[in-house]
Image (cartoon, rainbow, N blue to C red):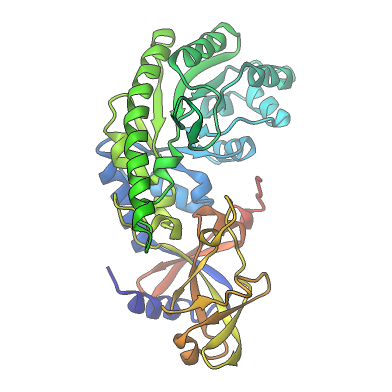
Length: 400
């Protein structure tokens, strides 16, 4: 692995002919991260989370590698677009109310065979039926299990508020409801443990909180492994030919893959390794996706101003949702201004070595959301841009 200083030289040289702002993906780092995900999955296939990539060319690149199989998408419109583009196994990870999309799905045998939709409520089935518009294709269905850890008799909840289905009886009952309804077939079960996979357990300068997170995650993994196994047994009693049980996320690949009940792992952020994945004891990846902003002002000693850069990520507002100045190392935000929509002042001694037109490289907080800001990703190998690839946005697709 190169030093950050060496990477900065490579990236500046590779993109010297381009004007910033711009975004790159370091393919050597991307491929190394892909290999690490496969290693941690321990022989179970990795389904790629498209919302963490948002670039068809890079989805194709990773799915061509051994150990990867299928896409986990985030909207029905995206799922249909990917299926029309030739992706043959697309699992929609979130319920949808896209009536036009369901009409397309139910009316096209190719789409119906390629796309699996997420359900955790009979009302969702009813919405799909009302949306069919004459379409008779069987709709493939995946059921979602709530993974949140409940403590103190349920008075404390740790984890995202997703599915209302928690126990084996609830999942089995919905599996029976789906199976009894013409035009639907249960093919999968999903459980995303975001409080384990998406929360770093080694926070810099916060040892007490880090230990508390590790204790919580250890308890959550044990509780979920036992409950997930029971749920899978209950659902398989209703649907013996269940095709897959999906679990995990970038931060919990190894632990989730060790569960016998799980047949495949979901991951995507681990390909780009944004800043939110710096604080894990279970793995370390290589930053692969970065963006550069040009220096446009030098307001004083130890200060430069770059164009734009205020690209906050989704989630609870906080400093951890902001991009971080990455190269040259040692720059930081002005606490009175932060990351600005049009301009961003940066403080630190490295500022005195930057000239007008030089670039500062940033890392985004959450992986694929970077692609909502740029039309193109410049793909870097060594010290050259060897290709460019449009993001979803660059192909005119904004799904949310």
